[in-house]
Figure 1: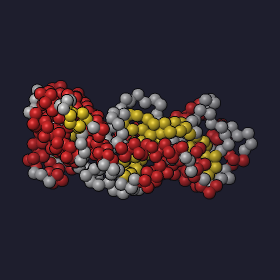
Figure 2: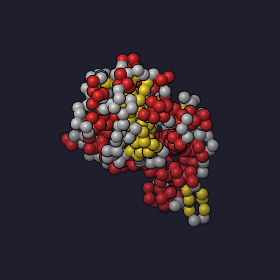
Figure 3: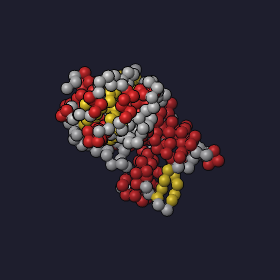
Figure 4: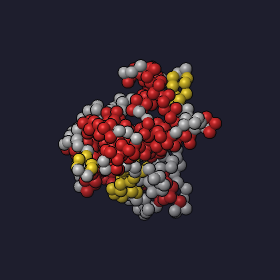
Length: 423
């Protein structure tokens, strides 16, 4: 859905990194100038010459295609795009600093070497970041070098530089190729988050130039999302055809892991009220109740004064264990002193669950709003039984650190608009 985003702003190759990554050293200068208000004071703070600082800012502005500072007699003041870039750069460096600390924590104490991990954000090179991503995607230094268009010794040196500055082993050399150690995995996650923030920079800058583009990966949870997500995405790509959308599904746990590794940008579906993570942000869109569903003509639909315990005489398609729907089903039956239906057949896919219900006569829990919206030609019916306390909060989950990229903000707005104007 939508068109493919241009490669310079939204790389789809697994080893590609955003173009502005090449300017990561200039980003450090950007923070210094914004914080100190002049190239002279910034130069003194970061131990560079004033001409080098001034040149770095000019080169960064050229790469961004926008002025990042207003030059005055009293110093330099960030423009509106510059202010946004400063904020994102701070997030990039925070991820890199956390990556260094988490890599150190993941390494055995006996395997640590004298190093300066606190210097990592200011000394890491774009080449080392590219090499880390490439070796993870390609599995060997030779393949990584080929993908990057450099020599194998260059990749080896870039990876070795990462280990030297952190003082921990990041890679295993194996016959089958190169694999990450636990410390390497910890660093990789934060590097991917930092690169996602640089990608967000590029999308922001493109939007400032009137060129709205991007690529959003949306993780989808079962139930309720069909009530708003298709219309939200259709409206978004119709209005902004250079925003590409990729939909993936999975369990909440797997999608959150992907979200916090920058493999997914947002998760649509039931929100978790028991989450204690400070790394995620939840946007509540609406509440949806669950309902028991049966195929048309099912015997339970002919019962008068139907009770919950009556439904136990039929087989069910139950939700996956540990999901909000599974907890709702268990709480529903236990609240009346009943054992929940046996979990002989479990499904996470609403479409497959509904197919089993219509074709086999099993019962199941489903989103009331979704069933009413989809209709199914009258083949699927809601069992007339009240289900107290099954309302679930539906919305979109994103990463908490930093501001959403411009394309992601537009996606969130489209979701809100779709809920506000139901079909």
